[in-house]
Picture (cartoon, rainbow, N blue to C red):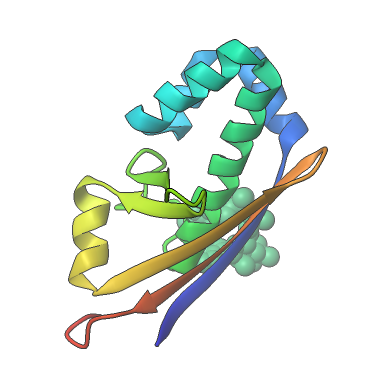
Length: 135
Ligand SMILES: CC(C)(COP(=O)(O)OP(=O)(O)OC[C@H]1O[C@@H](n2cnc3c(N)ncnc32)[C@H](O)[C@@H]1OP(=O)(O)O)[C@@H](O)C(=O)NCCC(=O)NCCS
């Protein structure tokens, strides 16, 4: 059963401007520790790759926050929601702390898809109930 869906479009130019204004502090607010390590490696090689990485994570987390119906309200926070990757390259949602506990107690599972073009990053997320004892 579908619990919720969420979508988001993010203007990559706004992410670039925030990074220019606030530097790494902005990335630290949005990214989990593991994501920050990836962001640093990509940014060092080619800053634009870092900007795009951050913009796609930003949009995916917003899409997820809508799919669970909370928006950016506790226990949903930027850093407790992480985007992982399967060996195939497919993105997955990896949750931490209070958000993970809340999500598991409801018996939920998430599916996410990301895309980006020159100036925009977009994401779509579907959350389903996988456990009959959930919700
Ligand atoms: C959901 C949220 C992360 C999106 O913020 P945003 O990037 O500024 O805006 P977006 O254009 O991407 O999305 C806005 C849409 O998200 C949807 N939305 C808002 N709250 C939502 C929620 N709790 N769950 C799912 N979707 C939500 C609405 O359709 C909204 O469109 P609308 O303003 O025309 O009604 C943010 O609005 C949020 O955290 N909201 C919940 C907490 C809050 O502050 N509520 C204030 C009202 S009491």
